[in-house]
Image (cartoon, rainbow, N blue to C red; front, side, top):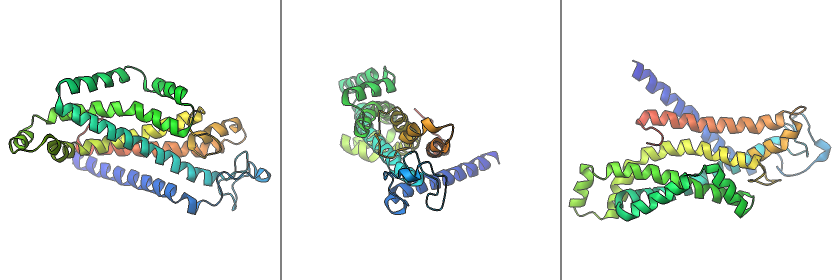
Length: 276
């Protein structure tokens, strides 16, 4: 009975969090058509206006519509977090699968490279790369991708090492399948559930990283609307107009919490632990 209730609860969490994330994704995709105003248009005559029919969530210190900026911020936060995740996952998956299946000197070289990068705190490396490349969204994306892929490579390599000695892989070798066929047809499909779980968990961290770096002025630059940058712009008005930080803060919390809860529910459903 307890197992049944846990499964039903897990399904509800997956449905609710998945639906919320789909809504956020649609809001970002449709932002140019559903936003009531231009998100970067300055209207000093309407600055710091309270919510009204014209400005449903009010305006910021430059008279820009808060709702429009939140919607466009969704495009950047979710869109570039997805780009960082996809690129890091692609490189890490390729490196991990090849390293784990090949073994030998190639495995040793790739894993020593990963160990060298992972020996430094990830954010220190990101700060260092941005210091070299300069602040900006594209530089932030490159820096995060260069740092994150090693974690995927290490996780997937460990999974492949535990799978490659299984009987079905031995049978595939005996039947004459090439290493590429074994990796693409047998190994990668068997770690797909892990990829999904890891992806949902890491997406939350990617959004947090983008928002944190933008809040520090090292990511998205003004006047581009992004949740972390909006937090940075609103901090000077926290006493009299706390909503300028409340709105983007709630967006970050809702999206990151949805990804984390979805990832945890999926990990329980498939019996997968993060980092396994």
